[in-house]
Length: 360
Image (tube, rainbow, N blue to C red):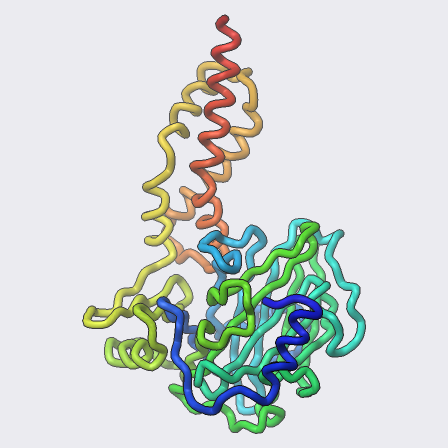
């Protein structure tokens, strides 16, 4: 993402200059969201009513933009559509709600100073032109067409602030985009990004990795518009992968994603199987620490280890359970396992050093 004055200059310089010829998908892994029809009216009040969003697929696991690290405060998104609107529902986990930054009050104002969400549409799926929509945590809106912020769309946005998260609901009218409702099987370029300021510094998260420059249509993910009763089949998955481009396509489902690569049978990878593979790399010092604290309950940092061990037990139960693993629980567990080795090793050597000092 380009910030403040530099960002504005860059946007103005590209306004009206986007070529009409199609570009290429530059993402090696093409992310694909299956967008289903809404079966009931969605009230845009920011509340993410489970009844309204029950038909949607929840997707989480957002990355720290420009890296392969899980974002520390996760994002979960849902999308639906009907004859009039494209709907977006988002939950942003936030452990520091009291410091949420929301100084912007004017439409099309400097939302990049706020805790905010941005989503992008490449409705022509040409990997070059885009529509940008942003909403702050207080639902102050911004929109932009191909870098031209004078363009306005009468779309809806509402937010809610919870104890440990803030949520957004948005509805974009197809008529405002001068488009008919998307046909079944259509692909649009799409991405969702987050700007977090509540942690005391700017942090950027994205679904499809745009490498910290949010206005990057060649690296967007995709919306795949389907029917309510659509079921994946090898031919349909292969067609999606071909049309999105990239070395691999990942079409998300309620409990994982289909991995589709050329000249191979599509494979459904469940969130549980992905976590099980990651868990196998858990560090052996965990068991040794358990032995130390079992023999010496008063050893230093016992409470730190107990918290770590309890969280690890929660993740293990998730992996060994029978129920499908949800997108948000997967994101929590994946982030925990990614940092487990470093945390355990640091704790292990501090305890070993303290134990050694006691014997001298």
